[in-house]
Image (cartoon, rainbow, N blue to C red; front, side, top):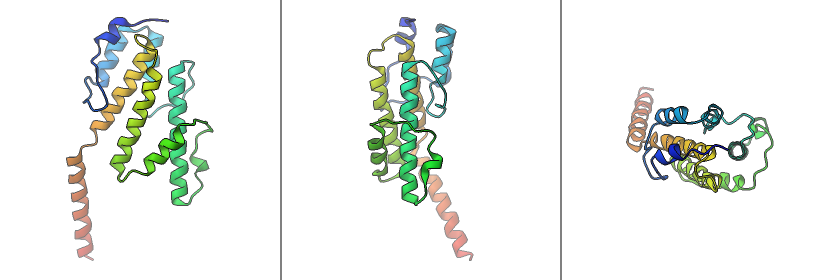
Length: 180
């Protein structure tokens, strides 16, 4: 197993409340220049959105099972909420004992933004579990990549921009109603 002392120790530390300390492009450049090719390909596979692949890497495997299970649970709850059969949206049966509670917690949130932030925090907490025992190896870099993606997604939620968009759309609706 390769150890990447220099790579891991050269990366800036961050937490869930931080801004992304580096861009994904910068992180990938560092990894590409310092990791073995097969390890770099594993780090590149780590994604919040694309997790439909087979892997022998235990951290990536646990991540894909967790993420697919969470999305399945969310689909089931959304389907029940809309009165439709969600089974056609469930990708494959994956049993994960923690994801039903996380999905239920997401449905208790007051706004879509709070729901997204809740889900990102739960993903972060799961990454804490995945990182345990991994300090300077490729698995640590996989977790770092996923956390960096979480922060990049989180900074896209700009309250001011969202309020501006809402106000603009609301004004358009009011204008179209008046014109009727």
